[in-house]
Length: 572
Image 1 (cartoon, rainbow, N blue to C red):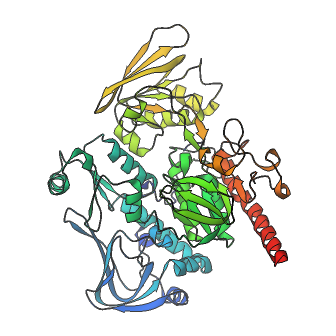
Image 2 (cartoon, helix red, strand yellow; image 1 turned 180 degrees about the horizontal axis):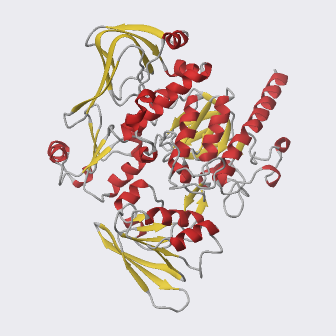
Image 3 (cartoon, rainbow, N blue to C red; image 1 turned 60 degrees about the vertical axis):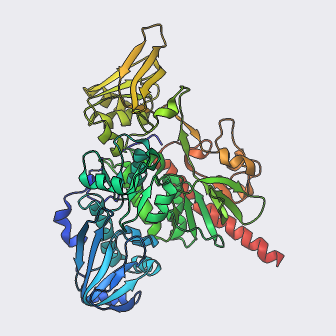
């Protein structure tokens, strides 16, 4: 995606609470007290239960209680970690309810819940909770707003979730931090060299360099150098895949196009599973500022936009699995199947390809050595914090590069923006060119290309560049190189299935593909397989266009499913 976005809207974001107004002023929205009429409306969706004083109602990372509405007594929520610290989060009294956005999808909470006094409460499991949100719009709006604000508070004011322990600059610490932040998961990062509690954790659990990083979970368990999948399973972002389930729609890719498909398909009663290998939101989710998205005149952060879409998809009942890389599309049999990296297959009547594009990499030796320790492919708050008051080099002349340069200029001492051509006019929007020209600490370098990277085991230290018009070589002493040199389609995993691609690897659809399948312009050469967003040949590479295609494909899926049902009925 080339449109990037700081959110000045007062609406809550589940990703970056810096864009919220002061949560302390929104206590009535964080912890509303429901009236008798509200309780009466909730009862038809809920089950009433009783707990004795001191009984456990739910446990962090274990139970999936849904929402608890207190009728009498109190529900005390607290959290602990592997450092032995316990912190009270909140005490819910009569008329109040527990929960945050994780409960929409049945993910386990990050806190423990214990009855204080004799507790009588209404319990709404995830399915009942979603039914409440749909069936009681005004009440559901209050519940949803409270959930969003609570997630923001968990991320910002009350750091919760996993504790990442490792040396600064370690690539695995960076990878996990990026995974958690982009997926809206609260966490804290501690340096054992300066934090006594973290040092104690290292003494108890660390043995060799291969153990970095340590991840201390809220239930007291400590993981050593876990994979993203292991962390996802513990936090519930990677749920157990039901092999026997046949979904109406399987969406590969949780960017704007994939999330829009999920929202519209699930809201129309179709069963939906969304897979993504890294985080919801795609490239748009890492965008600092989207200024040209319809309906947001003051702009909105990519984090805020895709977070709302993600929560909206869960609200309508879509299932989302992250990280769950799609490795193969198997279309020789029906239902269609998508194979994941662990060999698990997800079955579906239709498949929507929305895997977008992957960042292009320059042909440099040792590039992989510095990825995550000096070389980066997006500019999010995680990277911005790392390069505060430092000099950075950013390569690229498109809108994504321009937006990243402007965003990083608010944090870095100097942003060296480097392009191969004579300027930015041929590839960048005029409003960005004007903004770059007006930003004193962005220096534009033309007719330059990367030649070599230098550094050591601690990371990148120098970037060498060559001139393309006969000028002298240029050397930048920097620990931060950002690459925005274009993207290639994520389509390699489709070749075995026979989905037709153009010469650049983008997916052909409609009349450009073999067979028109009733004139459905987003359907590929394989019947029942659709493509939307950046992956589709001829698509407009904009967030709004991707979301539009994601919405439009749902009507075509309905037509395909109806067609298949008719064929089956006639055969019977």
